[in-house]
Length: 543
Image 1 (tube, rainbow, N blue to C red):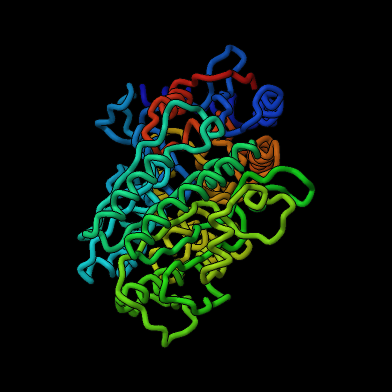
Image 2 (image 1 turned 180 degrees about the horizontal axis):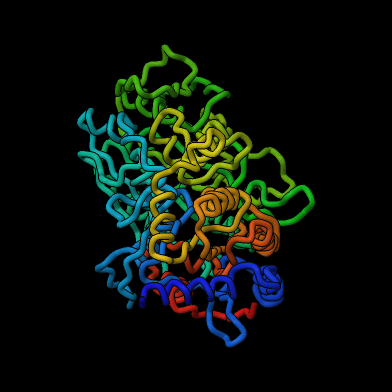
């Protein structure tokens, strides 16, 4: 009897909150537009929570509920997922809840979730694995901001180091809120560590990533971006010079573009990644040959293997960028420098990299073999016309072949209909119905980002309606990387209109991705999101 009463109360609350009365459904998007008066950056937007007339928050996550985290990519989604699903989570106080939780892709092996699109198998014969099999020692150096890229993605979505691989991860500074306050980030410490390993001859392959241009490129502060470009140029010059003293071959490249195309054609700021190619430079005293002009990121690994006199595995379909196949390469140690976010464009207008003083890169381009590489769209396994990103970039640098992204797999599943028969989705929806519980949909509110698309949200909503799920609550994360100003409000309005048209669901909470999509163990941020989701803490927006 008690169970029937609970179910009745839930249904009554749902129809009052979620469905079908004359309540205005276009509420949260209006609140976001109002918030733009005081908030410049959507990523930093504090929680907003839908509430009823009495001020009670609507749509909180409760024990026994179901949830789908529809984001893709994964590394920025782990911490929030842990807080909601890990029975022994102890980073901050949480409720003991048994949730039926599904994720779009595998964020990390071992999470207590169902996975809709699990990995298609471990990627083998990567660059790092091939160098390891050759008996070479390698070391990767960056700061925490890019640790997952040099580790997990560069190793073919495998987080474990290969035999003979070491990693030096410099802590990301926590004394600033955004890095336009400190465009140098931790580059001094990275440079010092790289220099030390260059001088240690036991390492045959040294890899470093300077993250500044990418990180600063997402912040609307052009002066800070220029400073970031200049400090990267200067520090890259120092490690290159040190490597040349040690008779090492050096490759300088990037994973995608950012600041070289910082404005839309209409003059609005574009803080996202770009579809530009990236530079590729070889610094090797014995190589004067030209480089191919039709290359892409997957050609970097075969080029490195040629320079190190290591046979390329059959699985690598990429081709060496050295045009002269007869060019004899002496066996040498090699330094790979990845200038994260450093795209290449001949255009000066709207190009913050061209605006900066970059004597090192200018000199290398003039004096050394130079070419550009495709780093976006199909060249890195993404839909045609899609901007590149650090995940796809590092994956392809390490894989030496094209790897189709999760977004392509998901789109194919939507087109062939298998998306609507996905067992992970159906299981959590069935649990919601059987338990008379709610279904919560969490994710990024974006047309398309490397973390996902509202189109995927809409498909899940369609499936929920088809399966007869009635209590659907949507929790959205904002952050307009690559989007025009005030895009978050537009996307939330689209979601609210979709709810109204389908007579299913409400947008019940909104928060900036800064608070919800962390990857550096800033648990205070994740706690803010958790408390919004579970307790309804935040600015209350009356329906």
